[in-house]
Length: 392
Image (cartoon, rainbow, N blue to C red; front, side, top):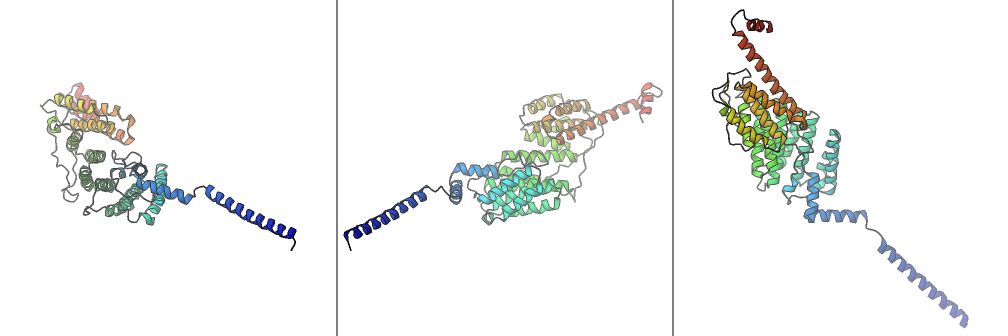
């Protein structure tokens, strides 16, 4: 083999080695420059969510229960979050969390069926199987959606399933778990109310109030007590409603100061059942004014009610007092108080305005009946007596 041939072969070999080396270096560089995959990003996201308080708080804010404690018609957008009260609760998996959030958005958009479908899928997520607290939250939301669709039996079954997730016999009932169970009871109470079981509903709300107290959930406690006040008002338990709202407002006075009512009232309690003690609302007929002056009481109580920052509480206080004033015969005072309550309903729900209008209408009716009674007592043949006959 000549020198030139050997030299050519050597050049070829060196070139081949250089090409291999350059190719290897290029592949390494490409591998290093590849961006993180979606799997890695997702893993990092879960890792951060499970290990940092800020991430846990973020999940909690978006997966918390959204029951409006302030009305008998729960709303998804005004409730306190519940998972933030117990950082030790297991954060739901990313899939179930996303399904829950998507369901919440559908609920807010008015698509109850879509929300129910997404929440059912969130519960079916295998990663949620052992997270009883999160399942209970979802089931409560589903019950509210069923109620919005007027699917009352389905709502009650769903609430029962949620309560089974958080048993009172458990040894690890944290304040957050107590609060979740209380919210389920609030939802159950509304269903019982609509299904014609008012006494049972009051018992349920009383149990919810107890749990809220044990959990230290002040906002939940307030909402449950407001539910009870509105229920008592609707049933005609005006004195109990008045006493309860003053208790909620922190006013240490007794509504019995206003005088004796026409019909004795048995206060509803957890020991009263609808079967053994049917509800008997207080008389709405005009009652002669009591000799005890209501002015000092009203001046003190109204001043404290006016100082309340919560508009719903302020209205409930005014309406309860107005109803009680009507039943003790102080119709003019009742009308003034109820008119004042009506002035602050602009920022509240139509339901609150309607209830206040009903109380005001009953007061005006009683004023008419009272005036008519006085006309009838006028001497025969006078203009007043004739006017009373024409009014019949």
